[in-house]
Length: 210
Image (cartoon, rainbow, N blue to C red; front, side, top):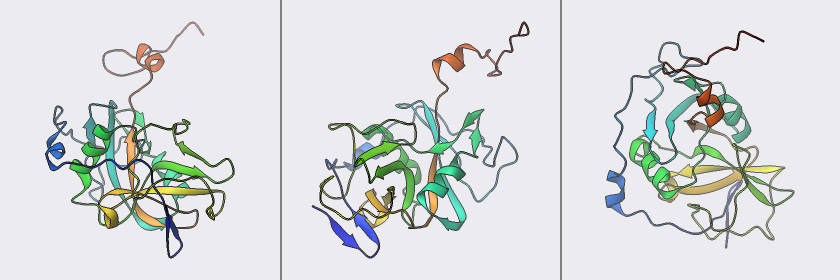
């Protein structure tokens, strides 16, 4: 099932209910002092403090923009952020625990649809995360309505996905031209290869022989 609201298409998958007691989960790491701007420079007080997610090993941050931007613009903007030496990207949410932790730390402040790192590719009819992975049936989703990949009018080449307070912080998808001024940045854990090249201070070692 699906519904059309103005220029937006609403669709969903397996609905995951969110019990209120789950909002108290994952407080194992205290919030850090933060550098919010591009690079690791002085904080911008418009932004919110990054918080740690134990399940994914990533930090996440709610970021307001001074202008409305489409999903692809938000994706590009998120990539300009960094924190603790980690490059930002739009949030990849692949577990219920991560979703709940994000809501626990942001739901009071999210007042409008907020972009995350998931898009629907209209041509191949696939859901793709910004980390390059494709959604597989049975994986975690939090759609507002039952998900279908068939028989709807896709708007453009892709449709971006938001967390929406309009529908209880579930996910909605919108046409490529739709703009919102909030998005969630993820600072993912470094890969094992990169971690192996770093010393205890987090500074990558340089091979001087090359």
